[in-house]
Length: 185
Image (tube, rainbow, N blue to C red; front, side):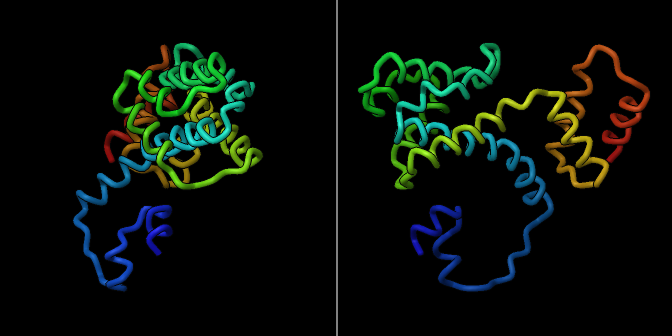
């Protein structure tokens, strides 16, 4: 149960106590939805690091070509390059070479993970996670617009959609109406 609670991100004490109605204030629910988007990205990065730590030869995978040099995820290419240059480097030594504390913490979390991956699973996970984080803005915009039309956008996703649309040089009347509609909700 302890392992399952760690993997599923559940509180072990709550599992033992059983069902209990928890009334969560709306502000806490709002904060939870806002962190889901960044949480998925964080877990994707964690999974990429776990794949590389367990199977360093995946660093030579062509999947990393999807990450642009000016992307906010370009640090993944730096980690990949270290693995390519030093095939026998231990993960703990590589962790010391990472200067950003947030990235170092995620790498450390991947380092102590007890989840064991086969090479094919690690390769598949690496591909999926890199595909996810390297979605270009137009693809992400379309996904968010689809979710908007189905009324499934969280508040964090609403802000993200607004930012994507506002970054464009010229907005169509439809997009301007969408921004106005999102702002009013």
